[in-house]
Image (cartoon, rainbow, N blue to C red):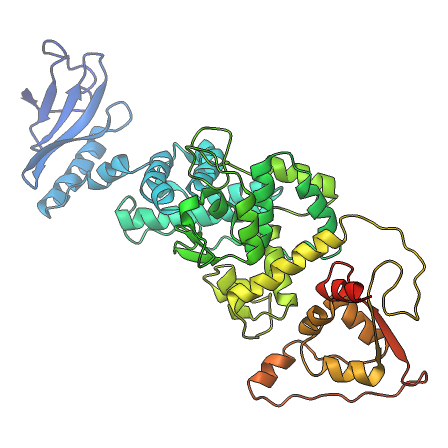
Length: 499
């Protein structure tokens, strides 16, 4: 190293000296620690050296062909002034160079949070690697702005708005974790803040009673035996698809009629109740030696990975293209609501952590979880069995109690039927007389007989004051009302035997 009086006209001509690409610096006589560095290639740059925090450093101030000597000296004085205040002038640049890129941030987020802590970790990986990394993967994480995220969100949301909202939630969570882990500076503004999500509407699609016979025939016609049983169990238990596919035989308690689910969507283990019909369905499933899973897949010792192919075949055969497989779970909740089950009980049956999830399902009425599912299973089996085959109508003898088709006919006066429906719930009456609750309610409506509203019996049992409307006379008088029982009901069988 040598010391020289640097001048604007000499900085362009001083030669390089040294061997094997050794460092060559001409130190300025005017400002200590300031100099001109000459490279073997002939390139020249102004530099300044300093020591801070027991560390000796060399800073590049700029190229000599782009920066005048006077400006370089001014920058050198500014650098040395910061050093005098015990600050490192290159600290910000070091932090920026050491900052994580978006790609490295995604990798850390997936390995430390999404995969080990979320059941939807694979979904997070798919969203980030398909949508975020290709556009911003090489960008420094701290250089991403809300405008960058908004562009991706709006472009993807033009076709799939709900999925674009999920991406926004994932990226927001990723930056929140990065701040906690120190991968971005504390207080760094989350680039997802302030971005407006696309509006979403709550899906309220479920299988109706009119659609159930066609669906039952389609499920029974599915060739994959384990997939067929799985679809029936989804309808009978209301558990989530992944929870059922991961279930093993050791999780079933036959005496208590429960299915132990170790890891649910909300992260809490749960004992799912099993109705009598669900237990019967479980006993129909063949066990495969060496495979501990209830729903077995084609590979040895592995469960069935997905029901997508089977469900596509089933809903196509049933003509229910708008019904998704998760709608089977929604069907269980909706049918329980129609049975008068309370919001709290429906949430318990479906294992909802947030009561808002079940807010649209039910009016409050205290019931037992297993008894509620028992009634649901029996009604489901009855509807599927009674409407699976169509029978030709024949002329019936209205004067006899048992028709020539084997159906039992109950006959009431308007006053008698009015007294009955206000003495006990319609569902109980329907079971007693071997009729459907829907048919009994329709008969009352045709005869102008008022029926108790939903929640009536719950309020009555709770001691609350409820109104009971009177029976209004009609122009037809107090005529006879005939209600036909189901041919496969115990009541109908008893009458047929007696005849």
